Length: 252
Image (cartoon, rainbow, N blue to C red):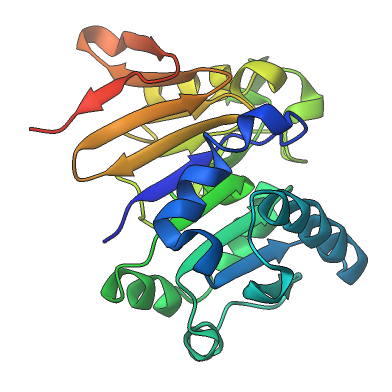
């Protein structure tokens, strides 16, 4: 499997693009890449907006428009392996703003993931696309319910439309759970609770305009913000380690 690139959202800081989207693009072939750009939205107009937003980023990094291959998906659809295969991409980028919908659409049929791994193609997940890349996907929620009482851990505005903390199967492209918009929307606390409750194993939360790159040499951070590694220890204690640009954890 080629490297997996996980970006915590954002995109308005153009000075961050070379060290985030640019690293993925170079691995996919630079200005020679054929990029399958997948957008998941609630409507065709929303998917079109998402595609336009990220097309602008990749075009600004030097990728010709004709080499960006749009794959818009909405509720009730799924990504067909044969459709992706026919595009003959050198890299795949998944962008979405609603995590429950993204998980529902992209995890309905994961034959495309097996093909991606067989072909050793780099994958980039942005925002919700990053969240579902993990072995387990923390899709949303703003509270946990114990003894019929709700205990909030973050603002409802960042709940993804769900009340209770909810975890679903992910794509399995990264061996841990992931959160996006970590510092900007306070989703780091949601991942802390998921780890503490042992709904997931290890977790990584990613700030906006920040890349977490997962590969054979380890897990590394690049960009303007931070990443946060969460691990559970004795008696349910959750340890949080913070990494900045250039920091990370080596394998082996």
